[in-house]
Image (cartoon, rainbow, N blue to C red; front, side, top):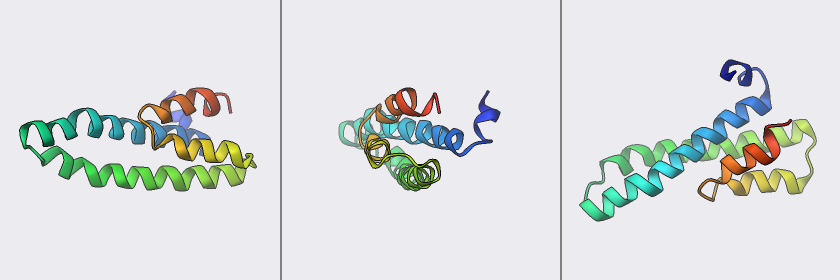
Length: 100
């Protein structure tokens, strides 16, 4: 099933959304508590740039896919904003991308 996702632009966007969402959850719920609760910045330093790159790639892929698929501005904007909210990319995947 995962190999099928690599064949389409929407499939690749879904994978990118999953990875971006997962990296945000790890940062918020694991890395930041380690940093501020236990003075351990190693995970934050390692995962911060990775999450930043995934975040930018998700936004660029969303805009590119939205243009290619001729989505309404509201749909594209909703998907872009979803990456700012924990669990947002998972919701958008289920609500918008899964059936396209």
